[in-house]
Length: 75
Image 1 (cartoon, helix red, strand yellow):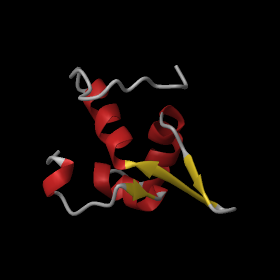
Image 2 (tube, rainbow, N blue to C red; image 1 turned 30 degrees about the vertical axis):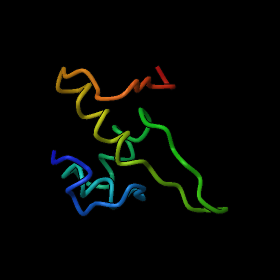
Image 3 (cartoon, rainbow, N blue to C red; image 1 turned 180 degrees about the vertical axis):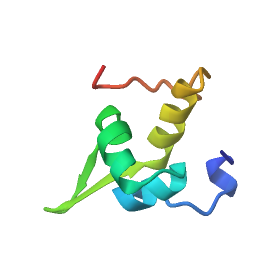
Image 4 (tube, rainbow, N blue to C red; image 1 turned 120 degrees about the horizontal axis):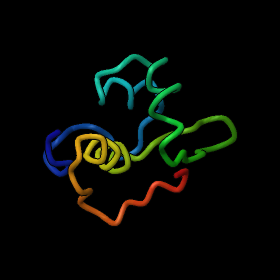
């Protein structure tokens, strides 16, 4: 995954965009990946995910130490 500073993806993504970012279906993202991430509520009905959390989740799944002090609050 390219470095966030040179990549056009937004820092905060709704589920559909986050799924595209990880190249999985929205259903797969919501059922498999989203439960392992911090969800950010924006307004009353909008839920989103930080790009850095998506990158760190992917690094963990690949066996790579995250670039930050990412600690999954759900595990």
